[in-house]
Image 1 (cartoon, rainbow, N blue to C red):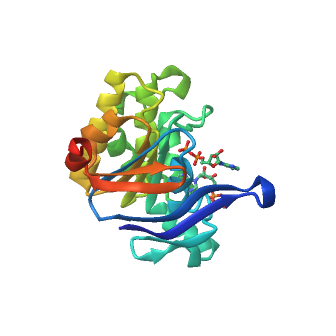
Image 2 (image 1 turned 45 degrees about the vertical axis):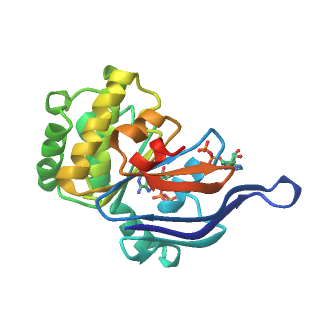
Length: 232
Ligand code: ADP
Ligand code: ADP
């Protein structure tokens, strides 16, 4: 479902060049939850942003759902991005829009009719447990509730891939647990492939099928979660 082949990413050039990713090969099969773990500065965020081309790799290729992302023109790339949801550490909600209108945003951008939007948004709010908060504004919500809104928004365009960039790092352990449970349900019930990055072992242990360890821009290990944590 997600394939990175020989992906490298260098920021800047000459003396100030930073080699954030070095020859990364990563394969995430359809329907799995794959974690990428590593220290701060290891290249996790760059890696996940290369999947939907929020960052463009300097070298290599990125294939998502059979499409070679770097070959797509602007409009085809926008289409492809509808199939790739993303959530972030700090939720990235629009503070001037209420919960319903945050979740509706991607559908509005796709030109959906108001009735279609209603029919899509309400079940999504049910699914994330926020049906009674539709009219509230982000400032009125807890961190966990904000992330639930962001998850509903990410699912609005019916993606088959969900990218999670430190999605629980701003949350307390209990809230983290409930968000991870929701992600697990989304994976199981909707069959959505999940790629997540985190610096927390616990996150990987609790929901990932496979895990890659990234260090200094290189993938240094790739294993089943069970193997990874029992390795000598
Ligand atoms: P992580 O997500 O694991 O903390 P990042 O992908 O954010 O790692 O960063 C990897 C390396 O790339 C770091 O050395 C970081 O300083 C550098 N880096 C990240 N983004 C940029 C950028 N936009 N410009 C220059 N250097 C960057
Ligand atoms: P533009 O092409 O005008 O630069 P984009 O549509 O590429 O705008 O992206 C605008 C912003 O929307 C990006 O900076 C990013 O934060 C967000 N974004 C784009 N694609 C996605 C996606 N698939 N999932 C989540 N956020 C996205």
